[in-house]
Image 1 (cartoon, rainbow, N blue to C red):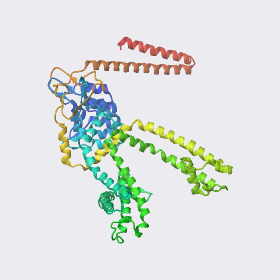
Image 2: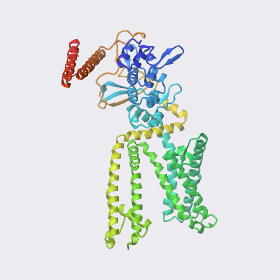
Image 3: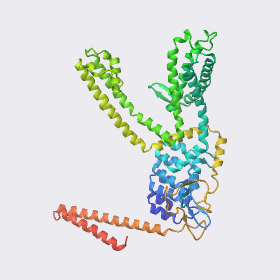
Length: 587
């Protein structure tokens, strides 16, 4: 610790001291000074040391210095390869230990041209290490780390947007469609065999009964069996690995059921199994002779209603699981996420409304009154709920003879329909305004989660073919004819989106020797000198103020000087310090 001038600057958390230390670093090994310090057989990373020890100002300065593009007359120098080569998990470390530095490193991966052509501007995103692991071209874990962090603002950064959109448009879109095709076909057959064909006028004809029977067989022996194998595999793996969660304080269930999509699929499997067990066409097989297949027989009469209830639930869950398709549109996905977040406010409203229904229902049921619709607690609660949602057909004038009953109903309406409903509207409005700020970020977070899940199932050959289409090893042009650095993706954006007045590449003339330090930037050092002079001036002022206060307290105890004298002396010392500093050097 502190064995090099770079480490001393980091320990002091001083950015000017760090820049002075790097001024003497050879240009070829400047990045190495910031990423590796060796002492015998041991080595340490100054960047990681700054992050782990909380010297975030020094860490930010290191990241910015590494991700500045410098150029001499022969070559370009850019520390992105050194940074990710030394710390391949730098994004994960920043998410965990220094999330405020994540935008800094993301911004360092972007280069924008100062020159625009045809209303467009070239932008290079050096995202190779966010897409692949360069050793074997496998999938980088960067996106999965960001998804695990669940920070919607990180997902809205332009670099992460480019990475996720590149994966989505180039590979995941087709893979996701393929994974959902069978589910959509299954829903189509379910609709035909349960909701459309049985309700048609020709439902009793032989060819229609055969179509209905074939559709239901397809549902049970393909869709249901597929769900059974899928969830059996997930459940066995969860119990084998101990990846479970406790439900109702005693029942251990697989943790993967936390995901609404997985829990919905599991519930759909159970409903299909109950439908298969209660299928009327199966129960009518022994009695069917000339009318095979049929769902109207004595054996089916007792189970038809229960079967229809399970069928209704399965149909609703089928459609709800199609909400996943909203990921194709960021705007639609954001709207769906806002709905799900806002609906969480309904829980408090429903609990309070239930308490009001039980309270007033119990009170009205013990009151002697002639009103038949409120004769007991269940009927009273149903009537009051109907009044709340404005579905009650009766009129208050029918209660005019029972004045206590009319009064208590008016009190309930005031508490539920006036106060509670308006409070719900206010809560939903506030929740929507809070979520709306990060609505697109939540949508992109949802899409990134789908990308990570799909990549786990994608064949390796498919991924490698996709990587080849990106041409990440080919150099990108900075401007026309100026061949730059590889490892990125170039896009064109509208020139007015991000105006650029200065070239972000630091270009230097003179010697191109690798062991020569970069020339000092005189303008930058003038700013640093001004900053140091201001610091020195403030230190002198604070010292003189503290001395004058200590003298004033001593005289005050002696009785010779009052508070106003001490104050005047203090202000005189401050003015004197300012005048003496101004005479020493102009700011």
